Each structure stands twice: as C-alpha cells, then as structure tokens.
Image 1 (cartoon, rainbow, N blue to C red):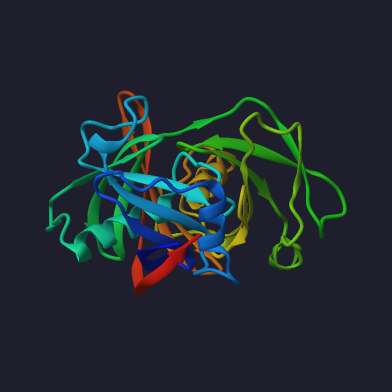
Image 2: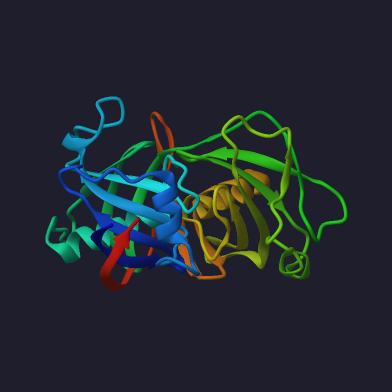
Length: 288
C-alpha cells in the first residue's frame, strides 16, 4: 500500500476529499475513490476533488485556458461533469496551498468537464460563474418516498443535469425520506440530481427571491447541499414565477445558505453561484 496526503473540505456541508496531484501522476480507480469517501471506513465525503494541472489532463477533457483542472468524482467513484460547491472548495484549497492567488477584483479560471468556470471573491466567500443554463423539454415524473403521488419535474442543465420538483409546503419538504432514491420516469440518459423546493413566504423580499431545497445527488444520495442544484432550483422557481421574477435568489439548504444571480447577455442567461468554502483538516491515508 502507498500513502497519499489529503485535505478535507466542505461548502455548506457538501464535503469533499481533496487530493493534490499537480502533474497528473496519480491514477485513482473508482473503487479507491469509493473507499476514500466512505464515511465509516475511509475519510468520508460526498465526492473527491483531484487537483491537477490542465496540461496533465487528457486532450479531450483539458481546458487550456485554465491552469488548474478540477477532476471531480462522486462518492461512488463515478465521474461527474461539475460541482458548484466543489469549485469553491477547490479554489479555497488552491489559495491555501499557494498554488494560486485571488485578490479583490481578480478572477481565477478553473477547468471542469463542463468547461472553464470563472471564480471571484464575494461577500459570502466565492462566486462561481456556472455559465449559460438551459431547460430541457422532456417532462419527468418524480416518485419519492414520502410523496403520495408522482410530481412533475422541470429539467434544468447548468453543466450537469437536474430535475427540480415543486412541493406545496415546508411539512411536505421535511417529510421526504431521501434515504430512498427518487424514481424518475423517464430516466434521463445521464441520470440527474433531483431537487425538491418550497418557496419562502413571501417569495420575494426587497427584490430578492427565497426558497428552501433538499437534494438527492446521483452517485451520492442526499447531501446537505448541492451548488449546481441550488442554481437549478432558483432557476426553476424563477421560471415558474413568470415575468417579473427577480434575478437574485437566496437558497436555504440543510447545510446553510447560498446565493444565486442571473446575468443576461447577448448569448443568453448566465447563472452565478456564491457561498462559503472551508478546509477542515489534512492528513495522510494508506491507499489500497
């Protein structure tokens, strides 16, 4: 067995094992990643972030306009395109380790499998430009443990796929049992994270919308937070609210609060996610 160094970090409770591999010499299998993120027998985490230079990534995946690439894996070892909380934690690690700097007004570009994401400092931590978003045309019915009947879900793509379901009350949201995986019909080709949302009362205060959300992440299960899911949920409620809905939102998740804002451009609407990122501890572990 070899020993590798790691750092544990989280963004509003969405937690990650961080492995520095600048030159891309470490090749982790899905089984090794699942063992590292196991909450009973490993370090524990919702996923793993491998910190690697873009130049060391396969040509088909590399992002040459960003020095650093976030190789993100779900807790079961499967590959995921993006992670909004993960990007903020990734940047927090880069700054802490001295791999990058980020001052007020500066930007830092991070490569992902969903393209390059731009990060800036914000009042509540870091803000990530997730890029252009789109809704998908297929209606998906969602069955979840705790809901008596299937509910329609709105497909939202923010670099990875989501299905957002509106619920009628706080009690309905709290009554969900997300230890059981929701059933999607039809099942999206690449699967999807599933978000359940309830609007605040009132929905809009001082021009800012507010919602609560819980999420079941593909390849993970229920998590305390999901950055791209937060963005997708705000976008879905904004869509349902219709003309005049605000472009700024706060989203409360079990792990805390995140901010979402929409910026209109000639190419379409871009969605930005802001929130905190923390590094918890570092150590070494034997890699089977």
